[in-house]
Length: 261
Image (cartoon, rainbow, N blue to C red; front, side, top):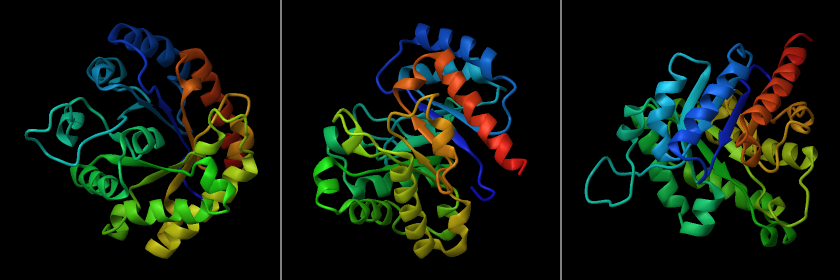
């Protein structure tokens, strides 16, 4: 894991009302208030961001959004700008999630524009990449993921690249009955780091690369022992505050043990 910071990000997707988010925050903070060995992020629906800002203020938990526009403002009905996210104390934003790509047709070019806008605004993008089952079975998984990384990061300086977080999610292992092993995660995260090295040189060793895909309290420790897996983007297991807190404590135990070596 070199000297990279471990990151655990929860992606609530389209779940939780304002009241549910506030209740979650109170219960969750009580469980993780003393965690300092890793970075914790909650990526919530837009409607929950402002109430979470009030609940999470001055806590160890960072706030993130699940998407944003590449535009600053204007006639873009239904969109949210980087400035709006900053206004509710977001410091992270998920970009290029597989559901945005697959269900809403987001292209690599659009994602690149969003990444550039987020960085210019001072937000840390969590860039999601991953391949579907057909691509995996054709033996083109690494090729596809490398292309996503390269296109999404096009035009960025080395300094900009060093501020990124990358999250690899194997779409083929979500709802297919197939399982991605910790070795699968390591292999692709290593391929992503090699790609980053080509783009930015040795600074690539500073970029945190997360794994997402059925991450739970029970398997987070195994994942974090892999040398190029620096954390996790957690979906369903982040929806319950106590379960997510347990996952974070399990991750923290691994980080503490590895730092003590």
